[in-house]
Image 1 (cartoon, rainbow, N blue to C red):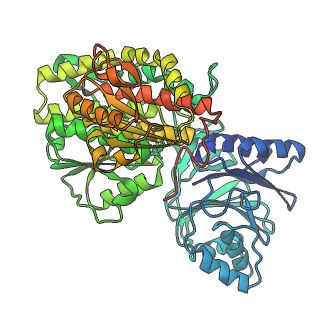
Image 2: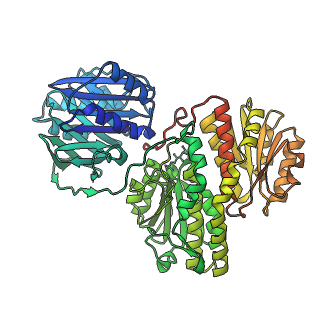
Image 3: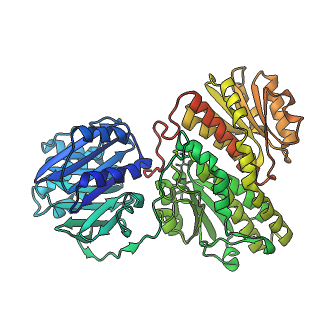
Length: 609
Ligand code: AGP
């Protein structure tokens, strides 16, 4: 994973690189580092922990120079120590790397026999030594890089500097994202556009197997085997959104509270109430195209996978089209049954998740039609899809997804209306009814947010619990999974979600008087069964916190705590229950004193496999 930044121009490299890293911190925040070269002198600063530590270090020991590279790390190989932080230096070659070098151990052994001394446990360090080794027999840094890249297996986005050739910056890409910004004779390299577009809107998107060589105020593009290529730049017209807390103590709480507006944004301009349909502007598939699909396959990871599971309930039930939901990291390794008659829908907040992107490419190789559901505009997944439904949640900084998830649910609901209207399974009246329900949703989300004081009380009561169980049936089951994931991510309390009816097949053995069980019990067609499952827990001494619907005074009577959630209709209740469970996880984490925006070991965008 990680974020990389490179700069060559006529200004001080250090502030450009540091501001770029700040924008990429969502890709990892285990450690960070920067290198500049000034008059042949290589200066490196590295620190473990968040970027703020590196900022402090640089304040004490500033560096100069108009050429430099930087890195923010999410550890894969080697602990998040200073020694493992990038940039890595092998001989006179310095690199920053995003990706994984899969054959690094073999290469490392070979290089050690040639006299190279390694100082880190990372896979990345091998790249600097390998280039340094090839420099001995190459005529230029460019040639040495090309020779070295031939030996690498895995994925990389690399920025490379050399002490010997201190006026050259090289960038190379295979499998990890990279964009380049151009502003006259100034050049910016980064893992993602937000690190660049405060400097320039002229962007070149690098493709796999390509390199850029920046020298003497100019750039040359070539393939990694040396053939020169022409790359067109394009103008990016969106603005980098500013990350402001607006008076909230952290981004997560701000983003949870932004959800009424986020829901408004995802539906804005899309509801065609009169014809009981929706307009999904970027989908690029009319009714006749949509009706060619025999199956739908939703692919995603983590929270987005939970949204995809809700999508299955919605689409299968309303549109009668078979839907598979795939964990993206599994999908590509099992020769999935996908054809030109399959609509593949990658669901991703960031649009950069490596597993989801790889699944998309696998589906592309099998001729599937691809319509992604993404939040980040122009992200890799959005760019590589045939169509895209943007969720318009806005910038999400908190690592634990909240408003992005809720808007994914709404986007899937919109897609359901569109598919159902296209194949006739949703008639005019039903379409209109679904749209009216959607129009009421933002206010209901707002009302759900008002449950916060009661939710805080629940968190106080069960704060010492080491485990928790979340139960749901039907469309509430994926929300139970998401509730459990939220709790794990930010409070570090172990939690699992189960279909309520599955408890008796094993997990019920976990029930004792220390086990809080959060039961999602909306007043829908599953309620009677859910009540029985609740009784099974109560009988065994478990503590039940029932999340019931407004107007239902019966279900919670035997529970230890009842939380009354507004009613949005069976298909939209998942949105409201998600909001309640986000607040629950949030309160647990805050009461435990955790950093909710940057939980340990996580990163916002997971760009390694
Ligand atoms: C969300 O809370 C998680 N941090 C994580 O599971 C996330 O949903 C997953 O990594 C997928 O990310 P994406 O939506 O950006 O593809």
